[in-house]
Length: 113
View 1 (cartoon, helix red, strand yellow):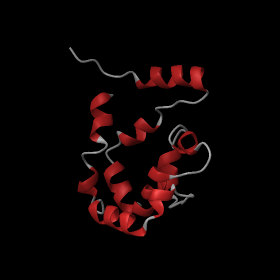
View 2: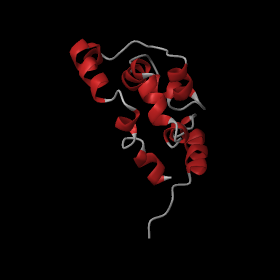
View 3: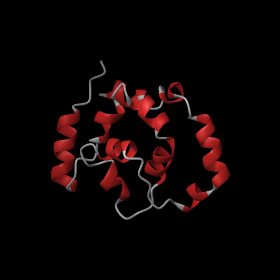
View 4: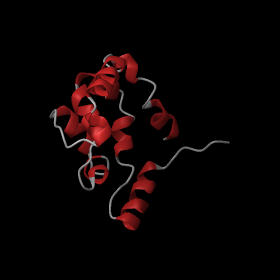
């Protein structure tokens, strides 16, 4: 029988092993507000998902409300080379502009926890 993920335990263990709670972003991704926040802050979502600065994932995904705060503050960061393609970004923004477009992607995190 499938078991729920003990997210608190995973974060505690990863913090002990790697120095940061590697799965803390799951709390945000499980929020019912995530589809709305992603679609309302689409440009920042693009930056969050494709950031290229040192320790980008650790700075954003592994810090308390790091991802949520990044989006709500409409921040941007240096992008990976492929993500600097304006056509690619524009197509992606057209494909994910509605909150309903974001309902499936984060559902995996909610189902796993």
